[in-house]
Length: 171
Image (tube, rainbow, N blue to C red; front, side):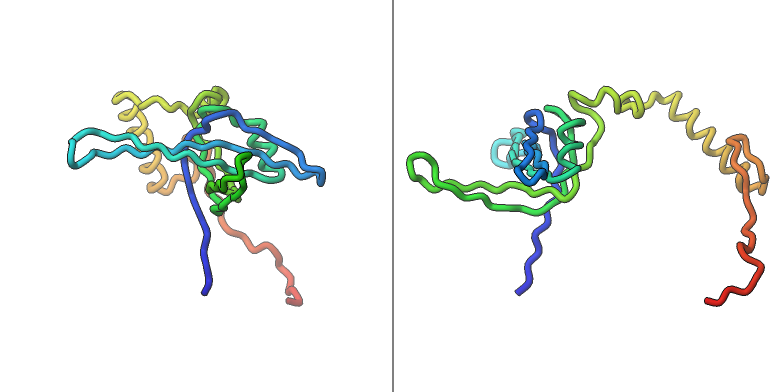
């Protein structure tokens, strides 16, 4: 029987990344992720906040990037596989927990250490006036484009496809 182990999780980092370099030179970075779920309890009618905490291991060059650019509070999207770690504690009691081995970590906007990102993309909602101006400029752009004009106010130029080679190629 075949198996499939894939997880995608989005949440905020609960602490700063912890990076270590192994003797082999390989970098591994441990992230701690918290993902929230909010729902209404049908019996009491109260809103309930449920939090899932998961450790994430990131390897190689991506581990170094995570260590450099991420910090506590930063939202991330993690794709990878689920892994079960088992050990015995100091009292000889068996312990286990699930963690994620990341294939890909996507840095999302917002959070405590996203000042540089916030300069590029504003997370603030648009005012009604800004929305109307944007819609107006998009309509204007679409009208110019459909009229067949080769040069638009945005500086875009329509190019005609031309044959790359005039001679016969052997393949």
